[in-house]
Image (cartoon, rainbow, N blue to C red; front, side):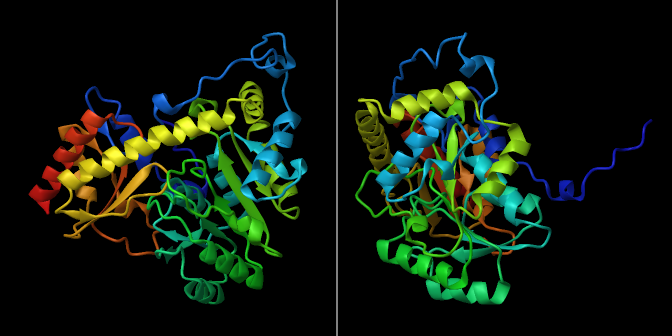
Length: 393
C-alpha cells in the first residue's frame, strides 16, 4: 500500500459543482429539468462553414494558435463590444474557452488565501467555487430592486478592504435582476472613488425580452481597473466553448500570461465560426429568433407558475436571461427538497446554494430554468414541484 499523495492545501477548499451534479442526474430518462441554464436547440442558429472553418488542410486545424485568440475574431470582438457601449481596442480582447475560464483567470489574478472579495448575494455558484478554491473570503452584497446599495458597497469597501468585486448586472444569475441605469452609474462612481477593480460578467446580455438598460458598468469607469467577461455559449452553440474578456490595460498582460499557462489557446475552428457569424447577414435575425423563442418560453413558464406556485411563492417576471427566481411564502430550506424532487423525476436548483459562505442564505428560494423544457413538461414538472413544496412546507 503506497502512502496517500500529498496534495496542495487548496484541495481542502475544492468543492464539486452542485449545478454539474444535478445536470448529471438530469440526464436520467424522463427527468424534467429546471436546474441548469441549458439552451434550447430550437433557439440556436444554423451556421454555415467557410473554407477556413472546415478545411482539414487549413492551419486552423493543423497548427497551434495565438494565446490571445484569432486576430480576425479579436478585431470583430472589439466591434461587437463597441455596439454595447464598451470601447476597446482589439489588443484589449482575449478569447477564452468559455467565459467560465475568465472567472478562473480573475481568481488567479486577484486571490490569495484569505483575500476579501465582494460579490452579490446571491451570485453565480461557479464563481463562488472558483474564488473560494483559491482561498477568497467572499463577502455578499444583498441585491435591491435597483441593483446593489451603493452606500452599503462603500461601507463594505471601507470595512473589508476587498481586492476586487464580481457582479452580474444584466439578467443576474440566479435572480434575473437587471441593474438600473442610475445604479450602474452610482456603482461606477464608488469603484472609481476607491480604485476597486471590477469583474463584470455578462453571459446573458443578448437574451433580452423586455427593454432595460444594459450599459456595461466597465464603460462608465474612469480610473478603476476592470475585466469584462462575455460568452457565445448562450447565443451560439455552447459546445464550442468560445468566450472572451476585455480588460483595462493595466490588467490585460497578466491575464494573457495566465491564459498561456492554462491552455495555450482556445479552439481555433470555433473562433473562426464565431468571427464569421459576427459579420454575417444573418446575425441580427439569429438574435431576434433567439429572443423570440426564449420570450415565448419565459411567458409559458410564467403562466405555468401562476397555475402551480401562485399560492406558494412570489417572483418577478425576468426581463431577460434564462431563470425565474422564486421566494416561497413559507421560507423553508429548499435544499432537502432536491433529493425528493430528483427521485420523482424533476430537477431544480435550491436558491440557498448561491450565497457566499460569509452570508446567511435567504431560505425558501429556488432558481428555475425556463429555456430547456417544452411547454408540456413545464406544466407537469412545476405541478410535481409545487406538490413537493406543499408536502414539506
